[in-house]
Length: 87
Image 1 (cartoon, rainbow, N blue to C red):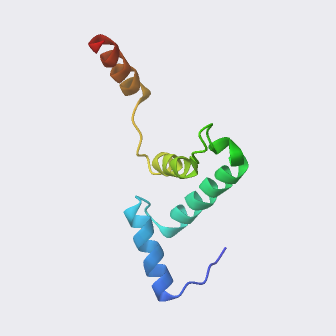
Image 2 (cartoon, helix red, strand yellow):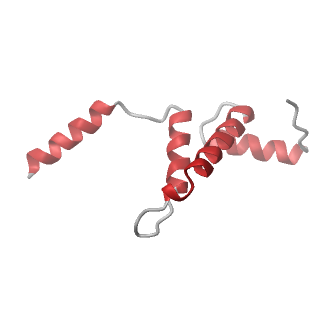
């Protein structure tokens, strides 16, 4: 697929991709499309009982996974164990 972009559009997208940890525009656009599709698929399931919409939270989580900004689940368990020890 080829997308025609003006120089300004390309510069903008390159900047956005880089700021968000993507190595190129194609990876960034694909991640945006995947996150958007997921948010659409989940729809009202992203709104909690208090009416808070968590769509942006899901987009951020998707971005973190796509860019490798993750931590091992063992760190979560360690943090929970530390919280239990303090109680």
